[in-house]
Length: 74
Image 1 (spheres, rainbow, N blue to C red):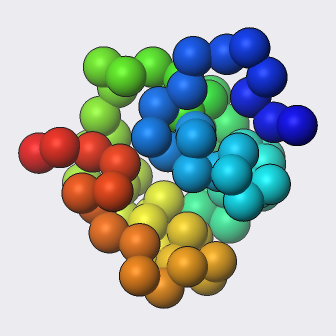
Image 2: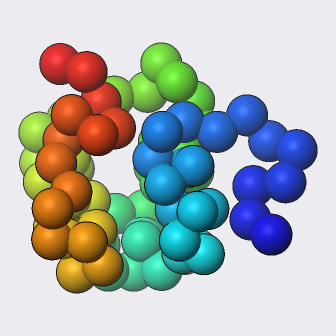
């Protein structure tokens, strides 16, 4: 099971629920693993617009209905 015992953000919980690894997201989005780790574990970490777009485009390969508001409040 992913994320066992860790405090997870909405993005982290979303990935865990679907069995998607952070490494997959980093590869698909072309965003560093460190940034993906921050986005899945730190509630106060909000990506800039370019990073957000890359992450959302990768996630839409799994679920085309994903939107920014599912993970980050702007």
